[in-house]
Image (cartoon, rainbow, N blue to C red; front, top):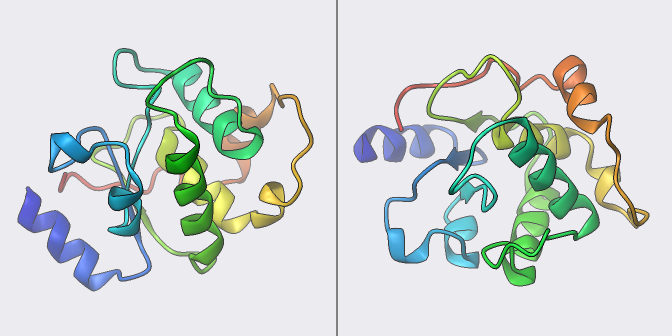
Length: 146
């Protein structure tokens, strides 16, 4: 699977791999992984679901880390920089189709809506996940290579 992901990344140099488990577990949530184009969701380590996706969105946009130590500011800033420097329409690879938004959906949504990262007001947007379900071109874009 690692070689499939490397091949995908070579063919999609602007693409991002949204992963559940990073190839090097020692560096799972770090600036290094983001610079390599691999981005994990620090909120989905012990749980899964819509709640973890909403937390990921709010953390990236507003900085709310919900007291999750893996959701540190350096990792967040690296992701924001990666999103801002990724061309609109760039592919986001996820290990499988979930039939619902994932943090891959959030990444794709923010790549195409960078203005959401500009001076985001404090607070949260409870409807943001619902918006992604209807707006993001990344819902349904997935692959089984990871």
